[in-house]
Length: 331
Ligand code: ATP
Ligand code: MG
Image (cartoon, rainbow, N blue to C red):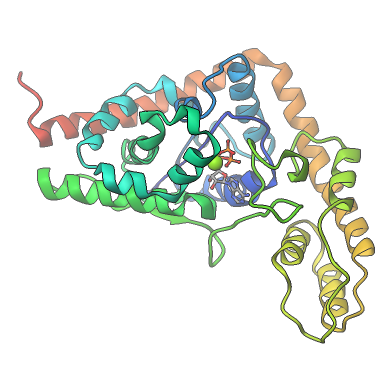
């Protein structure tokens, strides 16, 4: 039997290269080998984005952009979180497996409290519990995510272990997954934090950005006057440009700039121009395909419905087992 894979993306804005390289690229590679569930995390977005005016558009865009990146809705279950009510039920059970202290200590929670002190809601605190429910509702073992989600997957594993200890072995242990040796983090181009839907928007490359916007953002990326000693270590913002180059440029181009860097002969203006052109070539077909799909609302609705059906079949099976295991079933 194929191993079960789960991952989700919040409909909080435009998808970006961090989402692509941290998550979606892995989804596309995994779809043949694994039994995959990928979802749009609309409930999760309410923890930080309570205004729902843009929600529907964002949900449709996330679905369209995933397909434009190569996801095949025939091969995977591509669905919206709120269409699978079993997730909310499992979330309730798992809340009893999570300690308030450990949730309060989660770095992402502390960050969000700092950013948004006026809306420290309980949903924000229990975000990792809902994420654990997303994963465990399909009894998934591999969770393709970026580096920023690693600790959340670890918490999901803890909650699963506690459940198993109390009620009997039901959940396999989920692991964060990336095809490379480590999880990916694409920094924002100004060197401040990661590329993100909700933050660092001027220094994030969005899949929907027009060619000129891509060029402009890359040309403005943070650099410095270059290394003064051969074979120096790269500052993280320079490393990030090389990471991006590795993702979209040919190996000989990357090698050329590596050699220039190591020999203290690098001209960052040239590197950025090259990176900008390679990036445009990489991104523009995705943007066009996503725009076509977004115009076809009927097709998107059909895909989301079919995805929800597949997801519910798996989720209701798990909830049956959960009710049996906990004894919360009376006839
Ligand atoms: P938000 O700012 O609204 O939280 P986000 O950009 O962090 O949006 P999420 O929906 O939270 O996106 O995450 C979707 C997936 O993309 C997750 O697997 C996450 O780990 C990954 N991801 C997000 N940003 C990056 C990044 N800069 N580099 C690598 N992976 C990333
Ligand atoms: Mg995020």
